[in-house]
Image (cartoon, rainbow over all chains, first blue to last red; front, side, top):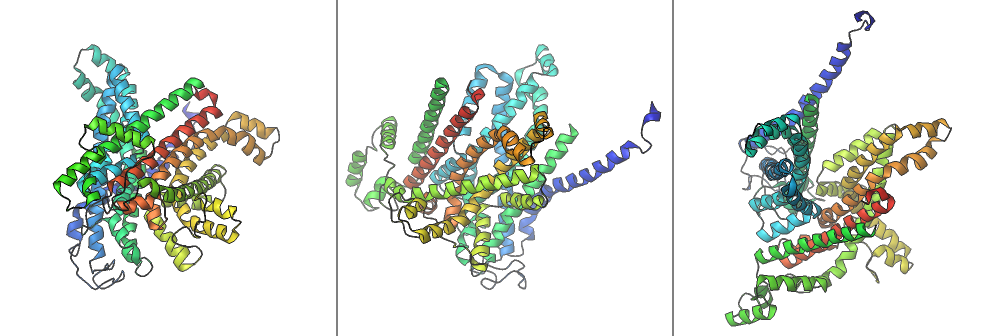
Length: 285
Length: 328
C-alpha cells in the first residue's frame, strides 16, 4: 500500500502550512502578553508625572522630550496615555475575570445539577441577558457615583450572564459524558465532581470566550469614561481625556486623538489576541 | 400563534417590570435628595419634612414603588434636577431626534452589512480591503471614529457638517425628514440628510460588522447547498440564483441579528450624540451625568431600555411570522 502514496511526502506540505499558521498564531497570542507587560511597567516607562504640568502648552507630537506632545495645561501625553492604558487594560481583564467567575459558577452549577436549580438559575440569567446591559450599567454607575471602583462594579453586574449561558451549555454536555457518569457512580461528592471532572473540560471554552470578549469590555469602559463615568478629573484615563479635549479637536487635534488612538490599539490587541487564542485552543483539541 | 404571542408579551412585561424595579432601586440609593434639589440646600427642616410627606417619600418602599409604577404608566418620569422640568417634557423635544438618527444609521448599517457579506461570499476583487477597513472600524471606540470623521469630512474636505441636526424644526412631528417634506422644504431636507450622514455612519459601523458576519456565513453555507447547484445547472443567471434562491434562505439569522443590533444602537447612540452635539436623548443623558441628575439619567435609561426590549420583542414576532417553525 505504501507504493500508492504520492512521491512528494505529504507531511511536508501539511507541516509548512502548519508552521506558517502557527507562527502567525504565536505572534497574535503574544500581543496581549506584550500589552500586559506594557501595562505592568507603564508607570516606570512614563517619563513624567501624568497629573502635573511639565512642559509648554499644547506642544505637538515629536516635540523635544514629549514624543506624543502635551495637553492644554502642559501635561505629558505619553505619560498620561501609559497610565491610561494600564487602567484600561487591567480594568477590562478584571471585568472579564469577574464575569467568568460569577457566570462560570452559575453556569457550571446549573449545567451539572440540572432540574429545578438549572431552570431557576437560567431563568434569572435570561432575564439579565434580555435587559439592555450597557444602559443598566450606565444607570448603576450613575447611582453609585463616578469612580473606577464603581464603574467596575457596574459593568461586572451586567457582564456575567453571557458567560453563564455559554458555560452552562458546555458543562451540561460534559456532565453527560461517560467519565462523569463513572465518577458519579463511584459516589464522589458533587463539589469534587464539578472541580475534578467537569471544570477542566469547561476551561478551553471559557478561555476562548473570555479572550474574545476583552476587546468589547475595553470599548465599553472607554465609552463610560468618555461620558464621565470613570475616574474623576485629574486622573489619566483614555476615554475622559478624549472627551475633555474635544473642544481642541480642530486646533490641536493630537490632544483628543492620542488617548483615543490608544483605546483603538488596546482594543485591537485584545481582538487579535483573542483570535490567536481561539486558533490555538481549537487546534489543540 | 396566539399562545406564542401571549408568551412573548408576558416575557416583555416581565422584562419591563424588572427594568423599572432596577431603576427604582438605583434611584433610592442614588446620591442627591430630590427634596433638597427642589427646595434648595438651605430649606428648613420643617419644610423638608413637609415636602417629603407631600411627595410620599416617608411611606414604605413598596408603596413608593407602586406609585413609581403607576407614574410610569401615566408617562410620569419624574422631574429633572438640572432643567427643573418634567423629564417627559424634555423627551418630547429630544426623543424624535434620537429615533431619527438611529433609524437612519440602521439603514446605513444594513447597506454596509450587505456589502460586507456579498463581497465576501462572491469573492469580489478588492473586497478584502473594504472588509479590513470595516473590521478595524468596528474595533475602534465610536468617539474616535467620530473624531476622524469630523477631521476628515468637516475640517479637511469641508463636505459635511460636524454638529447639530441642521434646519430648525417647524413641526409637527419632530422628525426633520418628515417635517421638511411636509413643508416641501427641499433645501432643508438636503441639509437634514447632510447632518445625519456623519453621525449615522459612525453609529452604523459596529452593527454593520455584526450583521455582515452572520449574513456572510449563512450566504456561504447556502451557496454550497445542493439546490443552489441545481438552480445553476438548469441555467439560471448568477444574480437570479442569488436573489430568489440564496438570499431568501440565508436571511433569517441576519434578521434576528439586525434586531439585536438595532437594540444595541439605542445604547451606543449616547456617545455619538455627545460628540456631534446631536440634540437627542443621548446627549441629554450625557449632559445629565456630570451634574448627577439622577431622575433624568434614570428616565433616559428606562425609555431607551424599553425601546430595546420592545425592539427585541417585535423582531421575535417578525421572525415567527416569517418562519412558522419557530413557533413551538
